[in-house]
Length: 547
Picture 1 (spheres, one colour):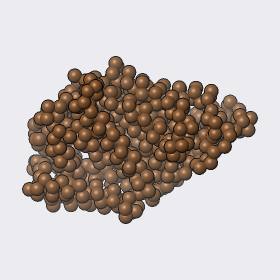
Picture 2 (spheres, one colour):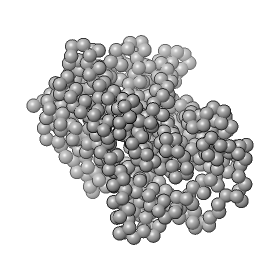
Picture 3 (cartoon, one colour):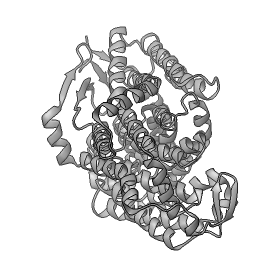
Picture 4 (tube, one colour):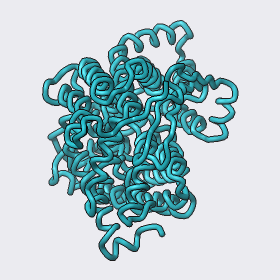
C-alpha cells in the first residue's frame, strides 16, 4: 500500500527533529567519541535509522527493510566497486616496484612534502573528481600519499580536505545536471551561480590544505606555489562554468592547475624543503636524487596514465550511454518502487519515490578502474593467474570496508525514504532571514548524510527552491548554495572516510580521521554560508547573483 511521508510525526518540531537526527548522532558519535570500528558504528546508525523510521515516523517495517537492502546494493555498486579496484591497482604497482619509481619521479619535481601534497591531493585529485567522482579521488590520492611516505592520518585527512573545490561540478557536471532536473531551473544559470561561489574557495583551499598539514609558518614558505595552484584552478573554473556550462568545469580546471603547478615547480624551489613531517632542510641537489631510465619512468607512470584515460573515457556521456546500452539492468524493487510519497512542503506536488536498482555494470566508474588495473597489470608482466590471486588478497583486505559502506548507504536510503532527511531540512528552512546561511548548511548536511553532492541536490534542491520563493530570495542562488555548501560536507561523510581509511590501509581508525577533518569541514561550510548570506543581502556581493 502507498505510504506518505510525515515530517512532524511526534507533534513537536523539536522532538521530531531530534528523532530524525538520532541515527546521524549515533553514527558520528560512535566513530568520533566512542571510537567504535567503522562497521560497528555504521550498523548501529542503521539500526537507529530503522527504529526511528518505523517507530517514530510510522513507516511500514516492510518498506523500511526493502529500503535498507536497496541502499546496501548501491553501497556495493558503485562505491564498493571503486574501492576494491583502486586498492587492487595500487597493490599491483607496489608489488612490481613501480610505485617506488613513481615516488622518485615526483621527488624529482619537488622533494617538498607540502608541494607533493598540493600536486597530488589538490590538482591530481581534482582531475579524478571532475572525471569520475564517487570516492575515486580520495581513494587514488590517499593511496599515492601513503606510498610517498605520508602518515596514514595525514594521507587520509588531507585527501578529504583537498576533495572540496571540484565536488560541486562532480563527474562531468553530474551534480548540477541533477539539480537542474529536480528544480526545473536553467542548468546554465545554476552552473554560472556555482561558478561565482566556489572559485573564491578554490583560491583558499590550497592554503588551507597546507596550513592543516604543517602550520601557518611553514605554509607561508611555499605561498607562491599555493597562489599558482589556486589561481590556475579558480580562474578556469569560473570561466568554464559561466561561459560553457557545468560539464567540463571540474576536469578542465584540474588539468590547467596540474600543468601550471608542474611547470612552476620545475622552475621554482622553496628556500627550505620539508622533507618529512616536521623536518626542513636545504633543497637536495638534483644529482642526489635517484635517477631512472626514461623507459622505467614510463612503465612506473603507465598504470596511472591508463587509469586517468579509462576513467575519463568512461565519464564521457556518449561512452556511458553506449556502455549502458550493452549492459544496464534495472531492477524495480517490489513492494517499494512508487509506494513512498514525498509531500509538500518538501516538494511542490506529491511525488512518488522510485526504487530502482540500476546495475549498469559496464559503465560503472569502478569497472573503468578494474579494466585499467587489468591492462596495467598485464603491461607490468603479471600473468592472469597472478592477477586473480592479487585480486583475492585485495577482496580479503577490504571486506570490512565493503560492509561499512553498504551499511552507510543503507542508513542514507532509510533516512531519505522515511522522510528523516526532510524533517531535518525543514528545520533549517524555518530560519527566516538567516536562511541563506542555514540553507547552505543544509547542503553541507545533505552531503554528510548521503556522501554525494548529486544526492544532496536531489534530496534538497526542490526544498531550497520552494523556501527561497517563500522568503523572496533568488531560487537560483539557494539551489546553487545547496551544491556549493555541500562540497564542504564531502570530507566528513562516512563513506568517504571509509574510502580514505581503506586506501591508506588504516582501517579501524575512522574516528580519528573524522575528528581530524570535522572542524575544517564545519568552518569552511560556515564561511560558504556567510558568503551566500552576503550574496543575498549585501552590495556588491548581490551583483554576483545570476538573475
